[in-house]
Length: 298
Image: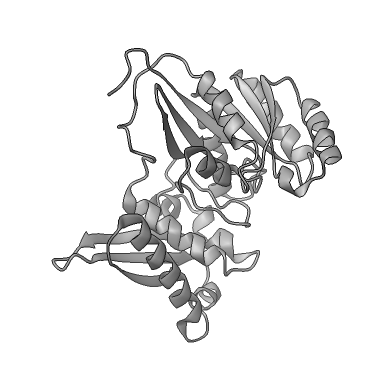
């Protein structure tokens, strides 16, 4: 039952690529709502993770890495980030403590400050630092501007995440319960399945190909025998990339499909059949029609 006095709000998690935003959102909501990868620009949409904590509901908005765009897709992703931080109650600006704070962080900081939203600066990956280095990173972060809080954490190990969660929930204003209790994400299951497939492929790809991969779930239906049948299409930009995704003798595609199936079965609690196909959509990152067709019509 919802308490008589209820608080709620939206929190955008922003930062340059590969600072650990998705890992942090998963840690904050205590379940996997966003895929993760060591590859930059893994997140390609505004993914909402929902935390229900007694009399508070926090909706964390995971965003793509804010970057200097080189394609139409990159421009669209930056638009998503700007839209996210302009319409929330709080921003978590995440920086990578291990890599250090640089010009990319300064660019994000400048634009976030321009939005005028209350902001916490979150220094992530402190598990990779000594105590002295943590202090150095916090000083460097303070030079990016004034923030309501500076919070050192490790999203990977959970160190400091509980404190950050408490600080965030304490800042939420009076508001309604936006999502039913027990709901941890607003992403439709077919879309989440497509993301899981992409996650498994990213783990096997080199540094160039990941940006060219998009996955769309075309069929998502429970059969009469209780098996969840999924058909997903993997899009690449060039014919040469198709063979890389499939792999020798279909090995790469089969392994990614098997890993995705195991995780989907664990999440949905049923038997799953996954069929994957690979298609070429030439230069889809740069074409308006192709972006719309693949779901990037921001």
